[in-house]
Length: 394
Image 1 (cartoon, helix red, strand yellow):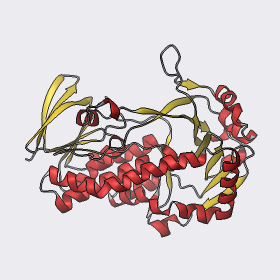
Image 2: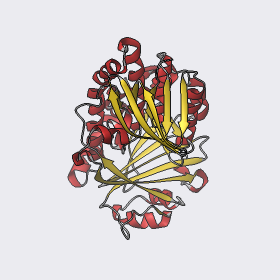
Image 3: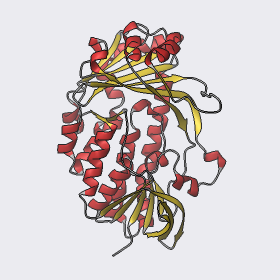
Image 4: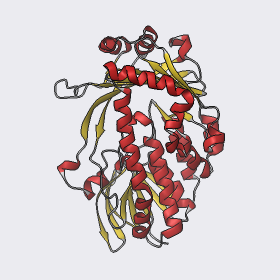
């Protein structure tokens, strides 16, 4: 039997890649450094461009059962809550072939895990961290750290799907100039019981609040009993005795955000969060190439992006789909398939990275620029605002 393609990382991108490779008739061995595959807290927004891929992998029944489909996105002015535009999402399936969906991270990862475990060509090992590796004429020799010690595994290819601080990327690009850099913004995340949220914010809709130097996104999850809230604010790095501050309670975060002069309803939502987790947002320099021989990168390992377009997971899913297609169409060897995969994906992923960064600048405008932006949003209306991002979903 031929050597498998090893995938480093069992996140959304890695598991989707394993499914896509199996559909292309390739063996995949997923190595996950954690002892157990599980996600905690927070939510994922899965736009139609990624939803079509997941449905094509046979996951639609499980996706439909676990997801919540927001009926609209309300763009609000942060200081008073005024709705600048309401984006109707009800026609997404007819227009783009899949709805907008939101998932609890743990639910989506379990769907992908179950799908991967059902494939005979997929094997998943936990407690296994990829160390260094060598690519010798199409055979990648990996040194893998496990609880039982160091193992050597020979693979026909290696896919680094191990996140923004990818060990595979670090081994491919050994330069300090490629190190993650703090973006100047932090995400504070919390899950709020719906009964503690202001009544107008409990609807099955997403909300986006715009403030100078900050924005807030929130949407219901599962059966609407909880609300996923993300506050992204521009701020210096937080240090306390040399360590990052990891959490705040709701009233403490609300006091810190007093400078934003937010609407009372938004402040009430923030105060309702029992524990707000601190997630500094990091960027990395763009890569000219993701692949070298029989080794390539996928998702955040290849193209980490700011979360302002909610496309990080979606682009990893698109990567995984393109990877499987490359093996189907061109893949006599991993080297050939990886080169084709990169050609198919690098321009679009880079475009989304740039657009995400620009979207953050747009969200965080202040003064006259923010006034002009709000007038433009009102003039475009929900239909026009949705059309602005149609290139993402097609």
